[in-house]
Structure formats: C-alpha cells, structure tokens
Image (cartoon, rainbow, N blue to C red; front, side, top):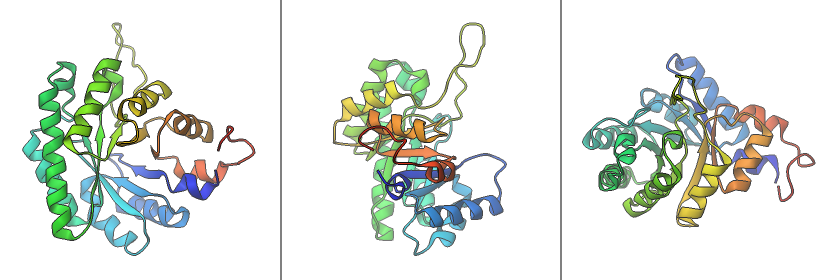
Length: 244
C-alpha cells in the first residue's frame, strides 16, 4: 500500500482541550499537504477548519456528545445540526455508554438514530452527504455488548462504527488505569459483526506504522490519530506487512 493510500484513510485528529486556532490551522495545513481523509476537531473549530480546507478535498469531521456520550439525544441532534451548518462533513458521535453497559440497546439505537436523522436532514439542507461514525468506547464493553452496539449502529443507519474517544479512563479494582484505545481484537470483532455494511474506524493509541498496519489487517478502513504525519512520513512499503 502506498503512503498516499494510507494517508487517505486517516482522520488527522486534534481534540485536546488546550488546542487553539493556530494549532487547528497547522492541523489543516498538514491535512492538505498529506491529503488526509479529514481533520477531526472539536465543534468550536468547525468554522475555522471549513475555511482552511475549502476546495482541498479534505473533509471536516467533528465530535458530538464527546467524550462521555452522557447527554440527551436531542442535545446530540442539535450539536449535529449546528456542526453541519458550520461546515462539518462528518460526525463522530459517542453512544450512551451507560445504556450499553446496562444492555438497554433500544436506548442506544434510539440515541444513534437521533443523530443520524439530524445529520441526514442537515446535510440535505447544505446539499451534501454527511458521514456518521458511532463511537462505542470499547474499553468499557465486553464482546457481546460491542457486537450488540455495532448492530444498533447499523440498524440506526450510521456509516461507521468507531472504537474509542481516546479520553476514557478505565480502571482496575485497585484504581490502576487500563488501556483506553483501539485494539486489534475489538477492530476484528467490529468488522466481523458489521461485515461490509459499515466502515470501521480504529481510534486511540495509533502512533506508528506498525499500529496502523495491524488495525488495517484487523478490518479497519479509517484510522483516527494525532500521529498521522509521523505515520505517513515513516511509511515504508518494504516494512509494511504482507498485503500492504
């Protein structure tokens, strides 16, 4: 796989709370230089990114209900509408994680559907097709729940399922922090569950060529990472795994 192809699968991400306009402008400049799929930013910077990326082919992705997912569905829908009006092309929404952990999958599906409906309607007003990605926050979920949430996303009409926010803080019984990002296991499970019906975005902890290749091999077709430039510049077909 050539580096141009891997670049086209990367959501170049900057969601840090301390990020200001200058950092967002630099992010957009890098995205244009390397032809990334999108920049993924907080909603407050959607207008800035839309202006910086106009005519470049790089899409503007933003987050909804981020990072906890614990806001009302109607608020997520309003966030979605506002973001699209500001210039967003893609919406990465966080599910109602508590409902998922309770196995209240009707609530999970309704929550996703509210965002999908808002995205479709707002996109139609703007004359463009909006991609909706559904963040499961897999570090909090067992395999059965991950699979069930993937099916909720599919039934609700979403376009992608996504592993993680990168901001979760799972802990063991002693209070020790546990891994919070994408894993090969979860990506493979998500791909197995949705088949070819949805995309799978691996996000959280993807910092190297090796990380990227392992996620692609597991079934991801989009990568969320703040290390996109590092990955593309280090990409070497002779070091990539067989088939890449």
